[in-house]
Image (cartoon, rainbow, N blue to C red; front, top):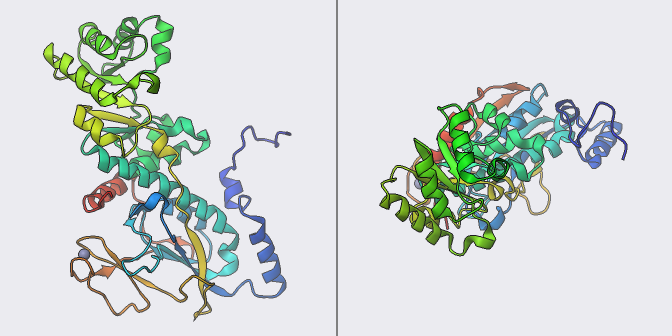
Length: 401
Ligand SMILES: [Zn+2]
């Protein structure tokens, strides 16, 4: 295959995304036809909904709004909806789909940007939701996002940011860490142990060379038994903060038993302060039992970075203030209300009828924020840290079936 001028990798640049190069051809043809017929400037209201969340998830963490707004900046459109980091179900209790974002303006302003906008939202919402599910499962234990190696490197910043916003405490990539404004975190790879020739030499070299501000956490499963290496590490490294078990599946047997055994043997020798970190194929189903067995912290990779996408759809529901809709969609402008107490949602066709929460009886509140007016952002950008704090606050009320 020919290399494209000025490009090395199979990625789209900011400029290519902003100019519509990553759209589907059928939108380009739609614009061609509407322009030829003098209909492209008609005002259209479109709403973003999801019919069903993947894997029977009861809720998802909305992310990608920030990038969608950056994409739409400068276009003659209004956008209102739920802010980045809102936890939402796909439907209300009575089964009406939640419009999480609304776009209104001349259709030609946003027609071809539907594809990249959906891409931003579908992908990052899936990742943030998996991170949030792992957060719930991990309780208060530290959890680091390790998943960027499983995906295209060009999207590492998005993956790490979504993982962090969803509830990871830190991320492993340099660029992801810069994106969220926190230092990157990690321990040591098997490669270091192998290159050094043996585990103890690697542990000592790490302690000798790496800045003392970096916690000494060593990998204890490269050549011999986890218990043996963990005890040896405690003896070899002063101020050892922890040991990491990344035991391969073929040697795992019972990972929980292994953790219990290592914890027991370390405690027995007076190394109660040495933490046990575990990684390797973890997800929201495995985390609780590992935490219960004595794991103090987790590195979670593939299950978060390769999360299923949330299949949002954008549908036109009003043209020039008249309701329209395709089969299977409810037409007309909608208003969204949220319970301030349990974060339950209700959809109404009328803005002046504020409903009471069907779950707790509390008077609901309007849920939308006006995010953009005629291409100008109204809501200020929030830091990943602020958005994450908001997600964690909502997560307390969410259940994990
Ligand atoms: Zn309620």
